[in-house]
Length: 313
Image (cartoon, rainbow, N blue to C red; front, side, top):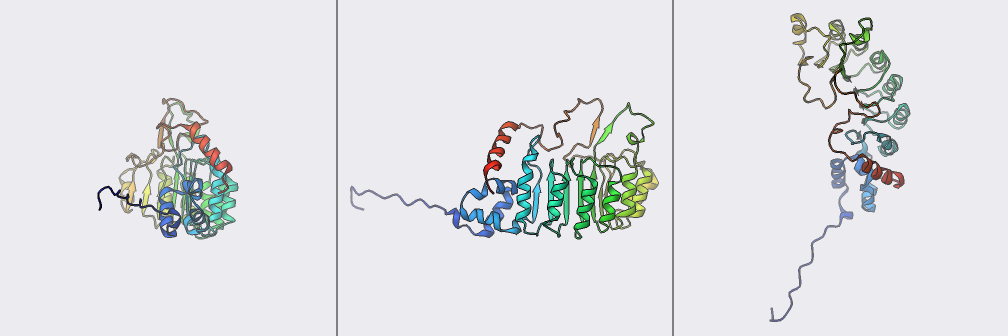
């Protein structure tokens, strides 16, 4: 180089995100989660928006849980319907937390018939009849999880009758310790209707989880007799079950058994509540993971109102 000549800086190596292959984009979208795909991925460029809207494979599993909402979960209703539409009839797994109602399940069933897994967490607006209707319209359904819902009695019987091929059933509640209970109010002491419903209708069951249930030894015996293919059983915090030597011997035949007093460290929801604990605000869903962590709810709601409110997906 001649003295005095200026050396040109090498051109910055850039990446054209619009030219990224669709299979790579699919992996990225699956990593960031479908909520973020709905919220922002489509606004990056036209090619990203095309993949987000026109690849049904991306929406085969819709998971709208762990979203961080508390009072504003209703904001996810419309985006969830958009996600269902984008599945193009290929939807196999559907999970929601803290929002939804019977209309959402009907919307789901009108757009897919190949559902294999249904998961409802802290959903208090779904009826047992709507879940049973969903099971009836989804012949491939093998797994149902209902954690911390509000249902009338005999929900297990209603659902089991419509879904006799069910392989996995999770029906989890919260065990409330109440020393001031009314001894004449059996619902506070024991309740075997859930267990009897399972025993009478879910004969193909392989995996059962009943955390915080009020079934008794009689109810557990009925399940073990009525579900001969059962392999795993989780009855943590089911303190009404008397695990005597005979019952332990019967349960020992299962591949996996979680007993009433076993740790719930790997269970992310409220498994039991003591009556002397501070009263909770009925208007807040404390079951959403991470609620007690720092959370700027107003800012979060504002962001989602702004984005979901005007963005046409």
